[in-house]
Amino acid sequence: MAKNPAPDASRRSEKSRRAIYEAALALVGDVGYPKTTVEGIAARAGVGKQTIYRWWPSKAAVLLEAFLDLSLQAAQEAGQAPYVIPDTGDLAADLKAVLRITVDQMADPRFAVPARALAAEGLVNEPLGREFVTKLLEPQLQLYVDRLRAAQAAGAVRADADPRVALELFVSPLAQRWLQHTGPITYAYTDTLVDYALYGLAPR
Image (tube, rainbow, N blue to C red; front, side):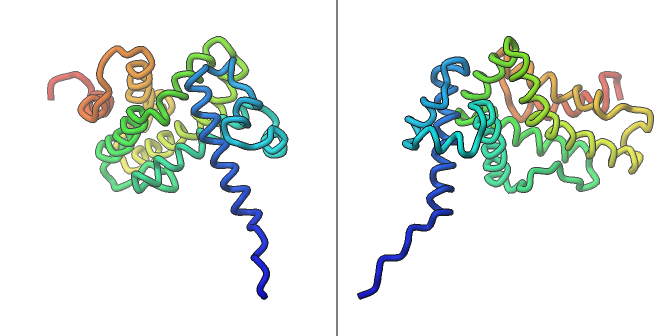
């Protein structure tokens, strides 16, 4: 009589990891970062807290990895995995395309609810804010820097423009509107930000 196959440890680990990601993001959205605990994440995920500590040193590390995974999922759903800013030779079209993906993320409660909770906490918890900026935000901003530098090399952007400042012309207004609810977040809005950033306000 054939024996039952041994459980697949890697599959079990991946299932637990994904449950922990989902639990961490849901919990921080429900109760906020200060009240989120490793114990709470473990209980919600249906795992022992020792499982979490085996893979991560803190709740912040869990949430950072969960957000990175969520960003990858969003990129895959948009057909943009690995997550890059395309270079079709048309800078405006490329920036508009990637910002539309960002709009979709901002409208998705899976992303928006925990992201707002962590953004608020990052304002008063400087170490947490710095960690998320360094490990999550800056790598994404670097993609814009790289795309703008490629545009400079192609003569589509002024050679003396600072890409790190230039990207803030369309990224920062979007972030402010999202965080402070100052207006609707739409494709038309982000398309307009790109047009204003690249072409200015002077009559053409």
